[in-house]
Image 1: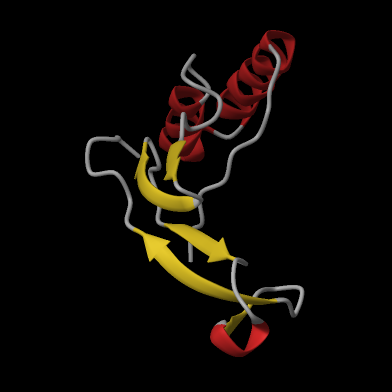
Image 2 (image 1 turned 180 degrees about the vertical axis):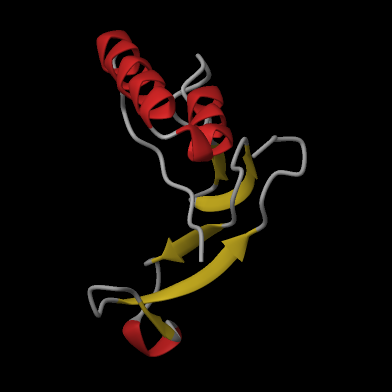
Length: 105
């Protein structure tokens, strides 16, 4: 199962990775297409998604720029009114905001 994640790389990190991958491709010709795919992923792009969460009156109203669904945790309320537990065992109300269809993955 493939899972996407973001890694912060400086330009010198990218240069080093390109050199290492190019050397690897020369030494292991059979995996050339895999190396080319990785090199394309290292091309300059936004390093992190540009996600905006709109809040009005203390409530999340909308999200944009998220290439994946966002889990929203609302802690506003009495414990008896909050039906969910977060990852730390705190009572909350949770829901998912869908991925922004306008964002390329």
